[in-house]
Image 1 (tube, rainbow, N blue to C red):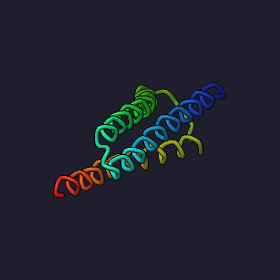
Image 2 (cartoon, one colour):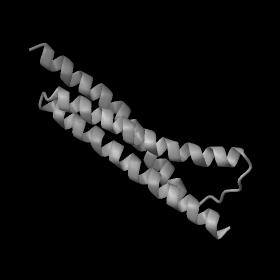
Image 3 (spheres, rainbow, N blue to C red):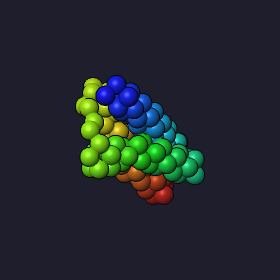
Length: 109
């Protein structure tokens, strides 16, 4: 049981790491778009997507294990990682919309 708990906790930390990286890139992308640097903004959004995909892969591994009958313990770190991933994905989704607003604003000038 201890090994399973350690593995889940380690996976939770990976989710937090990659989700945080993705959220940071999305926030940086908004700032670049605000300055009219859309090429850089687009690169940062691509990076955000890549990082969030990595976090999602770790999440999927946990879900597949549980679906295959692997017993998993729920711990606070795992709950935190899931919250972190979902909010980071929301930030990414909102960043897409905010960047589009800045892009349209500059094109109208």
